Image 1: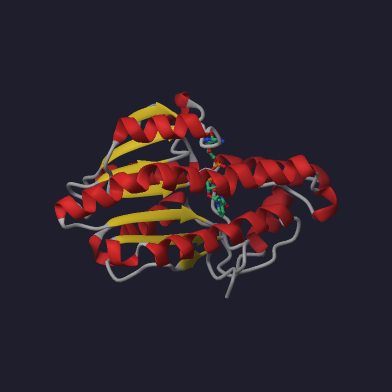
Image 2 (image 1 turned 90 degrees about the vertical axis):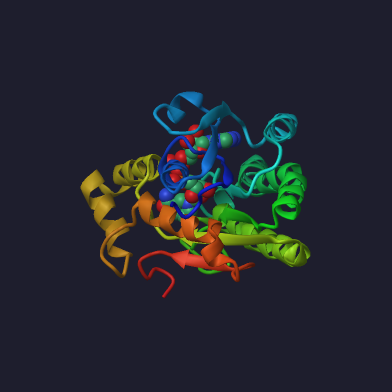
Length: 250
Ligand code: NAD
């Protein structure tokens, strides 16, 4: 049997990149997956029940949670990378980044945790919440990731707070801190950088060069960690922020 047989999972931003790889890996491991994204078309081909969900819309999140009910696994993936320093970050950039990267997790957990608690109690099982943070967070200051890194540090704080409050109620909460992972938005960032450094190839080389392992990561590698954290194999693991970054934060 799969590692997640009999479990019900919710994955946000499951349309592409890390979220999609997690939704796919969960299905392969036997979970029933509720995959959502702000862009429903991106969910095509996933073995999951699919819904459009904008995680910055509190009413939509509450309605989604009411429809789904009790779950075992919640993976908060949605996030946005703002490029620049404090001087490039307007108040609206700040608010947008915090809304999408942090408050979205607050909304999702607040809406879905009551159903998770009830299901864990009824089935004598445990629930697992996984939040996508980043190496660019409290783990590392990365150049031109001012508000992004600030939000991802907040994700680690939120993760530990939830882990602490529900530790005796069978709910675990952990954060994943990826380094550079190949994804559609990462390819866009490489192209953008290419415009200022001369070529896409040069930009690609710059991203690869900052990786001690000499390569960027694959979404499937992050998904394997998510499967572990979601599974009962990780029953003793809560409140952690786990780097998966080819040695970037080493
Ligand atoms: P991505 O950025 O390529 O895709 C993001 C997905 O989120 C898209 O499918 C998009 O439609 C969806 N989305 C955007 N706004 C949304 C909203 N309001 N509600 C719901 N969905 C929305 O994917 P990625 O690069 O794999 O990043 C996924 C997560 O992993 C993000 O939180 C990101 O910060 C984090 N992360 C990524 C990397 C990396 O190098 N790729 C590294 C560290 C952390």
